[in-house]
Image (cartoon, rainbow, N blue to C red; front, side, top):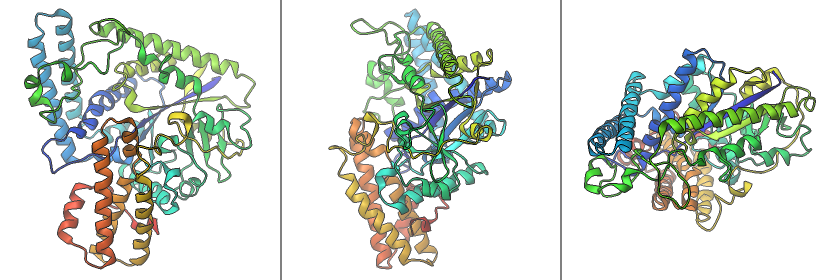
Length: 522
């Protein structure tokens, strides 16, 4: 082999769970991702295992996502959601009977949803356990990220950074029963100081965006085609810009091809509301159903009906183009690096299937084409370090993979108000832990819940949503609710008057990380 390709899929969603409501609109974020991303990935993994293909992917599962996937309430609600979609697709078969193109697509959705339901029930609603089995078989390396996907450099509070890292480590070990070597920095956000808790937790590598590595001091001799070690001894991999551009670029990226399915044109917005109402999470609010009949088509023209067969063929063509470009890259690098170069290609897992409906077909075609050549092989970053252990020492540059490469997505006029409140809460959490060094059961429960509320308030998702404007009211309310609950717990603990009934209600609502250790904030 002349080089290696490390595809890293980062799967994350914010913790959204509302037992106080029978249906809740934002819980659909999880349900859409299961239907369009996680179950299709499981299908592909089974196909690769069945055909004995030499594939090694890295999958980052955020602790909040894992917690939701393992939650029995959300599992039951997803089953109800999937049953409703199947029923709606059945109605669409009848409604579109006289429109051949749409009728064929309705049949496609009906059959696909039934297959996904069979798989969902076949793994006994345990997606995390099913993915873990592919880690055991060698097809996946599953890694973790910060507990609630906080932008670590922006916390500016060492105990809070430590808690985000160590809670994630404990959670991973509890779920998967093994040590985790890789750590996904949320938003690929690096700042000097994150290494100390990563080192304490024994994480051995992480990824930064291209400029984060190219701007390292001293400059990396081999660019992004080999890792460096920080002075603390943790390996840093840089994102390959060409792999990124071919998938992510608005102008050059594959997902924008006109034959692919249009994400935004959904029957949830096209059809009569009374017809759709029984299948919507919020009966009076239109939203995506996942049943979409039109291709992207292009600007200035009427939308063409989606041609599924043509789109799948195009995904295969794009996979072949992608592989050819990677082979050309490693051939140009011959003799430049002392060991075979590594091309690190990190992506949001939700791109493959949700935003880019044909993304799973692209991955499947890529894996099958990779098996037919001998220039490039799949590898995980940890395997690369085991094979090639000696690398340059350098300090990465503060950076992220957000817009403009730094912090402006999470600190701007729409969300800057969050950070002063978090600063106060973070200092208060450390104060509480130091005050209650040997807490009795009720006080320990209150400390644990205060930690959960603070972690949830720190999630990067809320300032991101406020910036993009997708669900700003919900994001604003979530931050306020978590901070309000934290401050209530702070007052109760400070004055020695913990309300056990209220505490139990809050524990049942925000129920992740049952074994959380408050001393991490000390």
